[in-house]
Structure formats: C-alpha cells, structure tokens
Length: 102
Image (cartoon, rainbow, N blue to C red; front, side):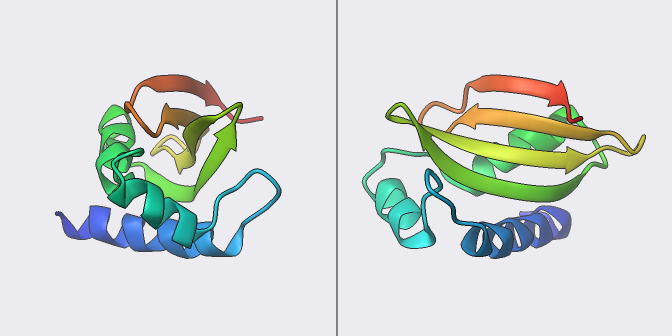
C-alpha cells in the first residue's frame, strides 16, 4: 500500500467515524459486513476511485445503506480543483455514479 493511499485510508476512516447520520453505517457495522464478506474493503475501492483521477485527494468517504444496497460515497478533489462525487457499490465495486459535485 502506498503512503498516499495509506494516508487517504486513515483520513477516510476518521471522517467515516465522525459523520454518521440516519442511513450511514458506523464503523462497527462496516467491520462486521466486511468480515462477513458482504462488502469489499474501503481501501481497495478507494484505490479504484483514485486511479480514475491520478493525484486526486480524498475529501470524504462514507458507507451508507440505500434500499438494502451498501454504497461507498466518496468525494475527491482532483488536481484541477474539481470536486468529484463518486458512488461505488460496496459489495461488487461497480461504479454507480461519478459526477462533478455542485
């Protein structure tokens, strides 16, 4: 794991642990789902998102449940200064959304 990815992962977990709302899952639930093989590791999917935007910085990452589907909601700041809102299916890694954030 590269230092940049490691730092981004730690930042994502810190943000994730402090931004829990109604449909967001806490870190204990996320760990349980990961251990059961229901969701993929955030680190793995975060690397996929960063590969689409080399040099991008992680702003926020959350695991949410929407209609019984687990989704990683990730915000990246690209080198060009554009904030991207990316959603990844936490179970399959499939890209669900990638758009410029308003």
